[in-house]
Amino acid sequence: MSVDGFELLTEAHDYLLAAVRGVPEDAWGAATPCSEWTVRQVFQHARLDQLALVMQITGDAPAGDPFAPADALDGDGRDAVAQLETALEGSMKAWESVREAGAVPTPMGPMPAQAATAVAALDAALHAWDIARATGQDRPLGESLAERLETPAAQIVEFVRTSFGKFGAVVDVPADADRAAKLLAFTGRDPLWAPRAV
Image (cartoon, rainbow, N blue to C red; front, top):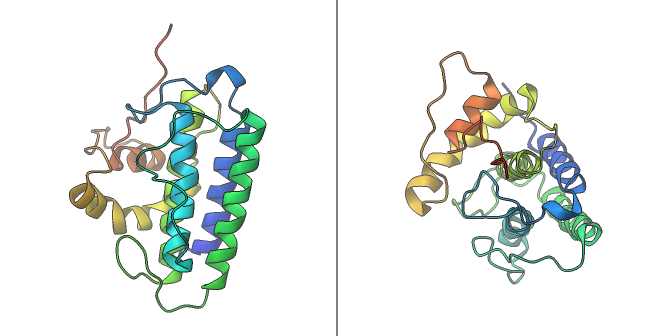
């Protein structure tokens, strides 16, 4: 299946924004499928990940460490949405500037621009699912999006898991599980994860 990384990134950004807009004000401290992080931290991580990938292109100074995300928000949920919108707009502009590039730098080494944008899309979509799941939103990772994310997942997940320890172990799912469940499981997420009842 041919994947347009730029179209995929737009869809994943929209998914991430929708999930963040849907976070109830009292749910930012909730546990997430990323067991060590709250919703606030997953939000900060997702925002900083998009910026970190762009910084590989622009050479700008880091805005923060995605792997040590703050457990605090600057302002309330509306401010979080505005911060994310700004980050995603900057991200898309940077990717557009290298649309025709043969290769762009990434933390995983040089990659064709289409492939690198698809990697950014994978990251945004996974964290959108984390946030939506943690806050009880009915925003599943759809089958079409999951299918198009299979290629970037195959390109980077195992490398990042073994080189940096940043994805959990593959989760077992039934052979007849849908594509979204299989993609989530491949990235170390339990597709059936649900918040604990309080």
